[in-house]
Length: 445
Ligand code: B12
Image: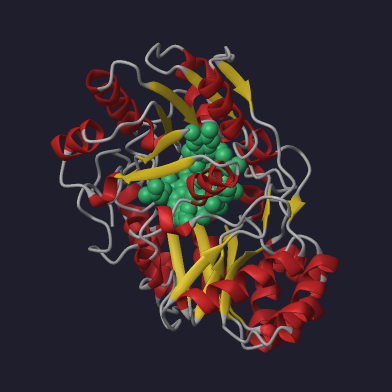
C-alpha cells in the first residue's frame, strides 16, 4: 500500500525555506515521520513525503498533491504546525475524492478532542505510530474497517528500523550544526523517548506521547546507527536530539564505552540537567572523553522561587556547579534560560542575570517564556487570562514577540542584553531603576 507523508513545518521558517535560511528550523528532518515511514517500508509498503519547506507556496502544494496517486495521507502535528496541517488536509480532500487522511503526532495526542472535531480527518493515531500506522495501512488495503481514533502502541526501540532519512532531503541538516563551531557534515539522532521529570512548561507532552517510563535504545543500537551514518554521510559531528540524553548513568557509561570501542571520536552535543551533572561528575568526565563538546543545559532561572514555580526540581547552586563541572572537562555550555515567566518580578529576573554572569556560558540562549499548547503551565496561563499570543503561530520562544500579559518585554530585552556581557551590581541597580514598560505591545529584542 502506498502512502504519502506530509511535514507541514512552515510555521517558523516559511515556504521555500529548506536549506536557505541557515536556521535549524529550516533544515531539520522530522524524526517522527522518518520513523513511521521506515516502519511502514519495513512492512512492505511504499512511502513518499511532501516537505512543505521545500515548496514555493500553497499552489505548489496543491500541484504536488494532484500529481500523486495516493490513497492514505499521513500528516504530523506539532501544535505550531497544526493550522498549516489543517489547510493542507483541506487541499488533499479537495484534490483527492477517495483520500484517507491520518493525523498523528504530539498535537493529535495532546489535543485529541480538537482534532477529532475536524471531520476531514479520517483517522487520528495518538502516541507512537510505528506499529499502528503500518497496521492501519494493512487494514485499508484489506478493506477492513478501522477505528477513527487509534491509540498508538509503543514499539520496542531496538526492534524498529532506523529512521528513513532519505524521505527528507538529508543534506539539509548535514550542513547546519545546531551550534557554532561543530564541523560539518552534522547529523541528529534520538537515543530514547520520554522524560521522567515534570517541568510544567513541557509536560505532559512527553508522557502523553511516550508513556510514563523512559525508553532507551541500547547503546549498541545507537552506536551501530552512528557507524552506518558515518559510512553513509561521513558526518563529523552529531547531536542527540533527545529531550534529555543523559538520564540514566548506567546507560550513559555503557554508551561512552561502546562509542569509544567502536572507534567513534566525532564530537557531539546533547541536552543535560544541572542536578544530574552535579550528581554524576564522573559521567560528565567520561562523556567529555568520548566526545561531548557542548552541553545544552536548561538552567532556566537564577531565582529559586521561579525554578520551583516551573517545577524544574533543580537549584540555583546546582546550576552554577554544573557549569563549573562542564568547564573543568572542556565541555562548552549552551545555556537555556527563560525570561518573562508569569508572576516573575524584576528582582527575580536580576537573579537570572547574576546567574548567567556566574555561569559564563559559551552561548546564551535566552527565551521568553512561551506557553506551549498542552503543557501544564499553558493551562494555568489560559485560566488566568494571561496569554496574549496565538497559541499556535505565536509559540516560537525567540524573544521577538510578547507572550503573556503583564510582562515587561521591553525591559526584559534590556535585561537579556545586560546578561550577555559580564557586569557589576551597579549595572543591575540601573536596570532595576528603569521606568516601567508593561505594555504587551512593547517592542521586543
Ligand atoms: C528535537 C526537537 C526539536 C528540534 C527539531 C529538530 C528535529 N530534528 O525534529 C528543534 C530544536 C529545532 C525544535 C524546535 C522547536 N520545538 Co521541539 N522538540 C524536539 C524534541 C526534543 C524531539 C523531537 C523528536 O525527534 N522526537 C522523536 C520522534 C520519534 O517523536 P515524535 O516526533 O513525537 O513522533 C512520534 C509520534 O508523535 C507519532 N507521530 C508523529 N507524527 C506522526 C504522523 C502520523 C501520520 C502518525 C500516524 C504518527 C505520528 O509517531 C512518531 C513515532 O513514534 C521534542 C520532544 C520529543 N521528545 O519528542 C520537542 C518538541 C516536539 N518541541 C516542541 C516545541 C514547542 C518546539 C518549538 C515550537 C519551540 C519554540 N517555542 O520555539 C520549536 C519549533 C520548531 C519548528 N520550526 O517547528 C514541543 C512541541 C509541543 C507541541 N504541543 O507541539 C515538544 C514536544 C517539546 C515539549 N514537550 O515542549 N524542537
